Image (cartoon, rainbow, N blue to C red; front, side, top):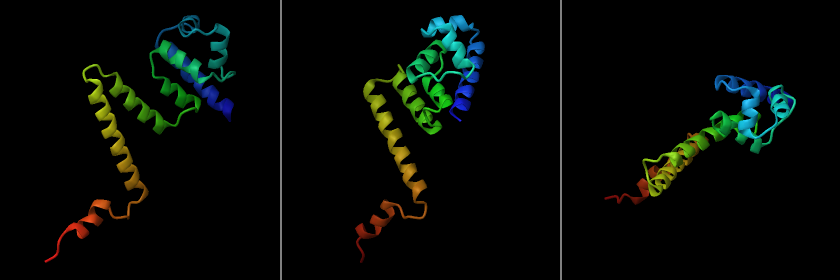
Length: 137
């Protein structure tokens, strides 16, 4: 089954290369790999390392995470989280403190939603504590 994933990766790489209007030789040169090696990857005969995938992604101007998902290295949900983080960190219009605050808020929302998904029927902590904290007359 691993070769099937590698084949899908190869097809995806070929499509991306053609979309970028690059020849096999041009992409190989830009990524720092040999022509035969890139050809073998595209034909599904070789499984590249994460480092090679990163070099190919950079040369194709796509996210490395996208290639990691295609190669089966990274789960789709992990890729989405990584991409959100990358976009926030790459934004030149906000400063480092603001980036960190945004990342903390994002992470708190993810945790909050993860807890709600895991226990839909359980009362929220704020509801349970409200009865205890409210003085009765």
